[in-house]
Image 1: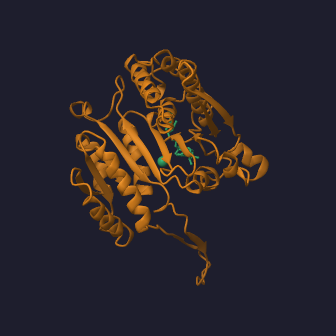
Image 2: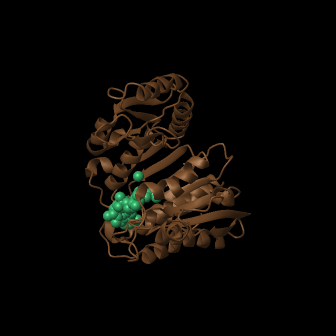
Image 3: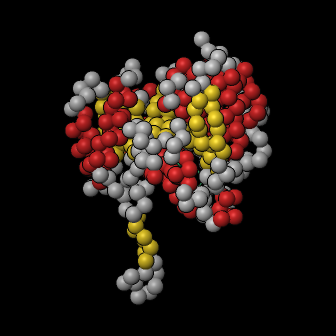
Amino acid sequence: RTLEIAAIPADGIGHDVVGAGREVVDALAAASGGRFSVNWTEYDWGSDYYAKHGVMMPADGREQVADKDAIFFGAVGWPTVPDHVSLWGLRLALCQGFDQWANIRPVQFLPGITSPLRAADEKDLDWIVVRENSEGEYSGFGGRNFAGRPDHQEFSVQSAVFSEYGSERIIRFAFELAMTRPRRKLSKVTKSNAQQHGMVLWDDVFDRVAADYPEVTTESVLVDAMAAKFVLKPGDLDVVVASNLHADVLSDLGSALAGSLGLASSANLNPERRFPSMFEPVHGSAPDIAGKGIANPLGAIGSAALMLEHLGLPEEAAAIHRAIEETTRRGVLTPDVGGTATTADVTRAVIDHLALV
Ligand code: NAI
Ligand code: MG
């Protein structure tokens, strides 16, 4: 079977890490004895494309990739384009345009990588942050205006939209995910003390859905307290469900606590499979290390594993996860996690440790 995959490296280290992920998937396909192969189509969309065409991707960009099995994405953002233009013009245009409403962000604690968390708790740590990925604080509603301001000072409105439909589908998704895990624990993040409309609806929907999952242990934690809990009581967490903004922040915190932003993987899923899902590392384009060949590719390689799992190849996905663990256990580490290896060294080590059982 041949997978049709769109590769969109976009900007900065997106190029390094998408290349690394592709090499690992190609090596796995070559070793799969014909179980699968991959036909990659690469798109040059991003900030360089913007410099030439004034847009991050062509007007029919979504149509061009709509029939692919999946999208493998790098990162957007470069100092030549305002960040909100590059993000909305490409990454959010794909995510929201393809209704990839469930963003799954596993936080993995890997052998051989020192986590700033207390060692005592580390052995049990395995978190998944489930992020609402279609509305909330990133719904895009709002504007800037001078209306009614005699002093000609601008004001702006940035509205957060929490629909019952949007909240229910992500909360139900998180409960289903918690049911597949040994601890069956789901933590809900909220800020319903201060945000008395949207977040209270979120709380109400959660309580209603929870009644369908009596086997799942739940807790409700305010987002500020949750940030502290990530650091102070890490052993207490399993699946964490949060709004678009809250989960965005918490998943960066989670990956930093696991050792580096460069380790974190993510899947932007359209669970109904009406549209392609998109797989990408959590990190951005890292202009500070772009072009140096030292970006940590493990977040992107882990995202490639999530992609294969989504496309019905769970054994291949597990082989990648094991190869990642073997690579870090043996100390083949990029500088962000205390090593001296290059992107290419780490990619080579992962490929060397791929072994299907
Ligand atoms: P960033 O994630 O690009 O970098 C933050 C820090 O982490 C930097 O010091 C960077 O060197 C380091 N880092 C990130 N990934 C790494 C990796 N794989 N290996 C080693 N070190 C790594 O976030 P920043 O600096 O806030 O944003 C840079 C640009 O990326 C901006 O234009 C921003 O808008 C964009 N961005 C895009 C995202 C996306 O496409 N999903 C997500 C976050 C930011
Ligand atoms: Mg983020």
